[in-house]
Image: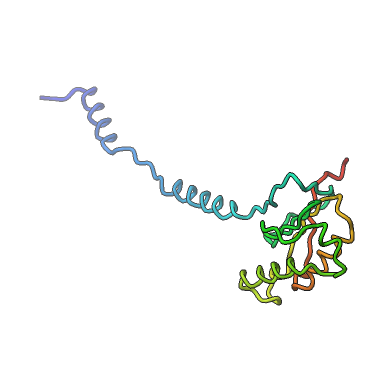
Length: 165
């Protein structure tokens, strides 16, 4: 039997579409892998200072973000290094010494705990979060103690305030 023109056309059409549609998702998987790696690597780069309600930081227009360093928090009552209370402000101000022995001991312990020598990069960096109302003599004693413990790069934590006002 002879096929009609319509039957021949339909046969050609069905022969052409026998293959299944294929989507190549390898490039999409590569993009998602790169995106996930980027997010994982950059999620650990943020440095946040400990939040404390008893310390009111001064305002500044400084634009450098803080590094991951040893943190000394000073309020009107206590001096706290890395979350441990090391001295009281009243006793420190009453002391005639320029250094604070308990803070010096804690800072030396932090250097030993980190496993870095005083000459290594990062071993000599410290951040002081001091209340804006603390006396300058107390801040000076803390800074002298930090220097005695080989923390020579001292940063003061501030609240960022835009330069526009």
